[in-house]
Length: 456
Image (cartoon, rainbow, N blue to C red; front, side):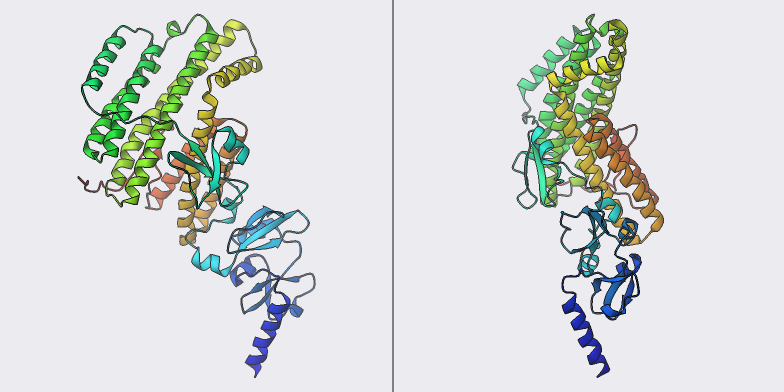
C-alpha cells in the first residue's frame, strides 16, 4: 500500500508538472539542485524546475547560473531559439537566455555524438547571407548538396540546414600523345622565361594538367597510376615553391601597383587550384567510403601529401605579397590604411576574396569535425583534464570564427590548421591517432595506420 501511494504521488506530480522539462538525476546534481519526492518538499528559495524520471522532481533556484548549465553538459541559447532533439530547456533568470539540457534519452542513446556544453555554445556555422555571397545555396541536411556541390558547413540559423557551394573543377585528362606534346612545349617555354614569378605561374598551369590526369586515374579506379601521377604532380608543386622562394626585387615590375595586381591574380589561381584539389579529394573519398574500398586510407595519405605542398605554395606567395606591399609603401609614401585600401581594391577587382573565404570555411568545418571526434573520446573516457584541454581548443575555434567574421580569411585558415595539429598531438598522447592530419608550419601531413593492401 505504501509503494502504491508513492507511485500515485509521483503520477500526480508528473501531471501537475507536465510542462516541466525532464532531466536525469546526475544533471540535477550538477545544476546544484536537490531531488525531492514531491513538488511541495522544495526548500525555501528553490522551486520545482524539472522532473527526474520517476524519482521525483529537481528543486533549483529560479536564477539558474550559466556555469551550472555547462557543468551539467548543457549549452546556452537565446530564449527565442529551440533546443535540439532530446534536449530539455530551462530559462536562465531574466537574461533572455535558456539552458538546453540532455534528457535521459540523449545521455543513453546519443552518448557517442553528444557535445559538451562549451562546444555547442560556439554555434559553428555559416549564415545564409554569407552563403549567398559565396554564390552558394542553402538546403536541409537530409536533402544534401546537389551533384558537384561541396558542403561548406552547417547554417547558424537552422540546426538542420547546410550551405552548399560549387567548387571550381578540373576536367579529367586522358593520357596520350596530346599530353606528351603539351609537356614538351611547356619545357621549351620555361627555358625562355627568366622572371621567377612568371616561371611559377607557368608551372601552375602544368600542375593543372597533371591534376586532371590524376583525376582520370582516380575515377577509373587505377589507383597505382593515380599515386604515381600524384608524385609527379607533387614535384611540379615543389618547383613552383622553388621559383616563389627565388623571386627577387628585379622580378618585380617597376609599377609596384601592377605587381600587387599580378600577385593577386596568381593568388586567385593558387586558391582556385587548391579548391579544385579539395573537390577531387572530397568526391574520391566519399565514393570509396560508400563502396567500403580498402584504398580509402591510402588515398587520404596521397591527398595530404599533395596538400602539404599547396599549403606551402600559398605561404610563399603570401611572403612575396608582404614584401611587395612594403616596397609599395616605401615608393608611394602611403600610410598603412591607404595601402591596405589599395590592396583590398585590387583583390576585390581580381576576385581572390571569395576563394579565400571558401578556404577559411573549409578549414573551420574540418577543424570542427576534428574537435567533435576528440570530444567524443574525452566524454567516453570521462577525463576532466582532457575536457579542460578541449575547452581551450574550443576557444581557439571561436577565434577562427571571429577571424572569418572580420574578413581575416587567411588568418582563419591558418588557425584552423594549427588547431587540427594540436588535436592530432592530443590524440597521439592518448595513443589514439586518428585521421585528422598533422600540420607542421601549416603543412598538412597525414598520420595513419599501416597501408592496407590495395584493390586492383
